[in-house]
Every structure is written in C-alpha cells, then in structure tokens.
Length: 452
Image (cartoon, rainbow, N blue to C red; front, side, top):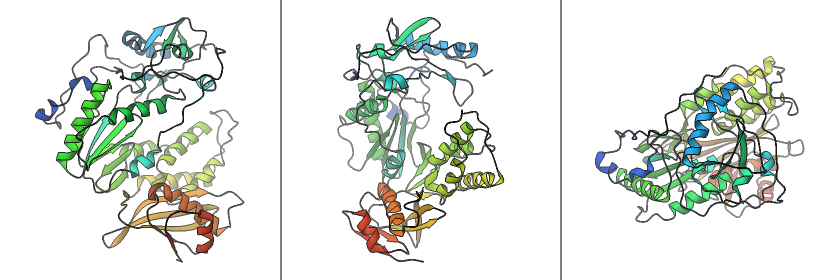
C-alpha cells in the first residue's frame, strides 16, 4: 500500500516564510498577494473564461471504475480543498470521465489525474504556442550573469472555464459528481491557454530594463540580466504584474537574483547549462525489468540527449526491445547487449560536461558524421583558445536515408537549426557540400568545409 500523504489544513492558512535571499527592503516592493499561503492554493487569473469549441454536442460518459481505499483517502483532502476554493463544484452533468489518483515522486502527496482522452477527441484544439524546452533554454542570453526563477502555483487551476464548458470536465468521486470551473491537467487546450494567459500578462509590463530577458515554459519563468540591479528591478516588475493579474507563486521555490539557478531540469550559470543533480539522481536506476520501466528510463534520457554524443545509437537498440502493443508490465528480454547500451547511457549522463549557451555573435561550427545507421553531430563555438560544445545531436536514420551522405548531413543541419536560429554556421563533413546545400534549401549563409 502506498503511504498516505499529510495535508496542510486549507481553512487555516499560514503566512509564507520570509526568504533570506530577498532583501527586506526589496520584499516590501512586491505585492504579497502573489505568494501562496497554503498547500494547493489557486489563483484566479483576470481573463476571459476559456470556452471550448466542440465537434459535437453528444455527451461522453465513461463510468468511474473502483478506486482503492488508499487512493480515496489520499485524494479526498485535495478534492475538499478545491471545493472550498470553488475550483470544483457539484454538478449533474451528462458527461463523465474517470479519475485515477497517483502518488507523487515524494511518496507522500497525491496528484489528481483524470483520463480526458475521450473528451480531447471532441474538442477542436487551439493552435499550440508552447515552445520546446531546448528552445527556451537556448534563448537565455549567454552574456547574462544573474537569474531569478519563479514557480507559479496550481497554474492551470488559476484559469477560469466558461460555464458552457465546465460540464464537459465532469467526474465522479465517492458517488458525488463534480465539474471543474478551471482548466485541468491532461486537457488538450490547457497548455496553450495558460501560455497565452502568461504572455498577455507579461506584455503589460512597463519600465522593464532594456537588457533583460523574460522567458516562460508552462508554470516556470526565468528572468535574466547582465547586472544584479537590472535583474532585481525586472524581477520585482514581473512579480507585481503577475500578482495584479491573479497568479499565485511559490515563495518556497523562488530563486531570487542568483548567479546559478535550476530551471527546467537544467542548472543555468553565466554562459553555461548543466544537467541538474535531480535529473542525474533520477537516471541512477537499476536495469529495467518491464516495458513501462524502460519507457520511463528512455523518457529521462531524451530530456538529457543534448549532453550525449551517441545517444541515438543506444536509444535505437533499447527501443527495439519494446513491444508497443504489449501491456506496460510485460517483462523485457534483457540481454547483455541491452545492459551495455543501458550502462553507456547512464554513464554519459552522470559524467556529462557543461554545455555552452548559444552566443549569436559568434559563428557556430557543426561536425557531422554517420555511424551504425545514426546521423550524429556536435555543435561547437569558440571559447577562448578552444571550442566548447553547445549541443550533441543524433537521430536514427530510416533505411532509405542511411548511406546517403548528403541527406545525413542535411538532417543534422536541420537539428542544429533549432539552436542556431539562422545565424552563420560552418558545417564540417567528409561528403559533398553541394549536394547538402541543395537538399537543405536554406535561406541563410552556410559554409561547408571538409574534415576527416
């Protein structure tokens, strides 16, 4: 049986602790309503309620399956909390999709998950504007030396849902039916709607120092600048505009004007990014025994693949062991060769070097090659008298492309383009430069030089 979580009593909120790294004088300049006062407190964003566009008005009803006693006991305080805040309300909606509470990584607290796949099929989704994590990380200016990271609390639960859409998000718990008045995780439009809400809020900022960068991915924001003064001023402005709009943030997780911060699983320092120790610890697992365990491991590897020179070689072999039609608990046919690839990936991650953040004032250098049906490359930039890696790139080739040098190089160049963003790049390859450029049809200047 999973251990039951302990929950703070929502009816008796406690003041957020004062952060030692926020100077008292600075703290008085931040709207205190931004900080969450108790566990799972939600904000309420001042915006037009989200209204779904449905393909059909025919309700979807999937019966709730029985939950174990520990799941019911674990999730009940959270549901009561959301009812008290008005995030959940009773309903007689004809819609219903099942919930399945899961224990979080700490082994103590619970997450309310709802299977909304059937609902998502009914929705005409909005165009996604959520960027990839690497794009966000590589957008941090390499010259910036100070950083603030803000973690928004119960982010999706702060976005109001239109009364006409609320019944679509209904579920049943202990013979009572509830519907969400806010957006929920697992719903197709949630990431896009929330990102739009944050971007529109940040667009209201005034008097922001010109040399400041503000980036957002999901509920995590990073503010950076070359000077402590500008970073602090910008951080105050961002905090206040978020508070005024109705967001809530975690003071406990706040990283305030630091030369080194953790953001999206990366340790960010001036000009550098490193895999966070949390990610490294997660990867130190025993050999997987089931399909589900291997898929979980490969998911972690994918997050770190920019640090792994030959990632796709090992990834390709391990994925060949997965029968995607088999149940998650299906045992793996684990061989000595599988163990070799598994160990190689773990070693690459636990010994991963620092990667440079892109410097768009310098040329990029991309070295390309093919090995074992995999296109590989390393993207470099000059750093002092040497060259420092910005990213390692690799991708499995299909049978048609494998053995076609120009196509292999073009694939790696396309991967690098997500980092280079049309800035000058020198490509080093032993293959015909003309054919590569013809395949790429690039609208920028690319130089191709041979190398052995």
